[in-house]
Length: 182
Ligand code: PRP
Picture 1 (tube, rainbow, N blue to C red):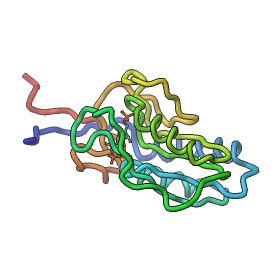
Picture 2 (picture 1 turned 60 degrees about the vertical axis):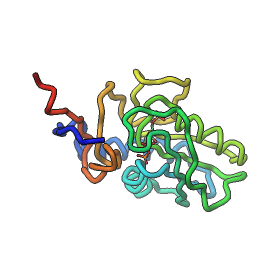
Picture 3 (picture 1 turned 60 degrees about the horizontal axis):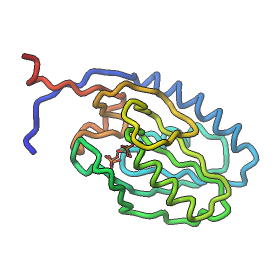
């Protein structure tokens, strides 16, 4: 697919993200206060920045694991078919688990992954998403914690890509195509 030219406008600053993560970490800590160890599962690839910042705010015994699920490939629209490319390394049976996602759009990914992880019989399974686009929801799924509700805009940065680019931006930005101004 040839690339259309685009610009990125800041939507959520790095400072706002950091402040929100401090609040979220406090809530998660309260919820899992009595845990012997929390398995924090990042969904690759988009959550790698968020999980890195989130676990460093958690004053709990934590284990980090990753799972790769994808429904988009390099396309802009979800294929609605969620595939698991990489499974967890560790066992989660009888463990406390927090799934970390960058964004909930249609809801297919997190809903599918949560159902899949439940089959492994964790003690408690919770989920957190930094961003939530409720206007796009196709399946009835709500994360236990959400960082920011956003409108139906195409966003990049802080782990989120556009055709594998822009994951390294420290803020969340909105994509604005520059060839459709007319
Ligand atoms: C994106 C994003 C979420 C998912 C959300 O992942 O990181 O995991 O889509 O969309 P949904 O709610 O409509 O399922 P993607 O499949 O692009 O993989 P990536 O994390 O590797 O970028």
